[in-house]
Length: 88
Image (cartoon, rainbow, N blue to C red):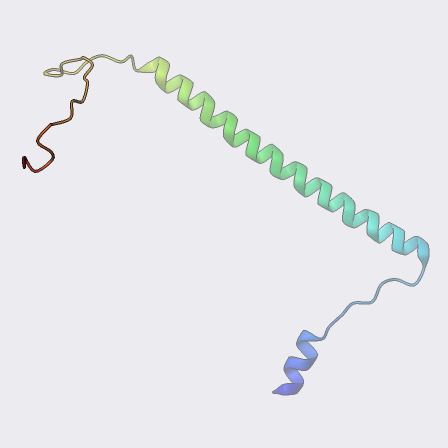
């Protein structure tokens, strides 16, 4: 059992010995990172744009009309001098 864990978790791929291959592998990794970041940004911006357009379409489609039995108005909260329990 120890042999399995030692062999499984001690794997370390070696770097290429040739300097040109090392540079190419590094550039390949950097290019992959750039592609993934760009792809994530495009997906995220697309989601934000979709949500904004959906919100605009929904607000334009349904005008705000008051429902039956609803009274529109403003209110001001006045503190009860007796306190919340009515004690003086």
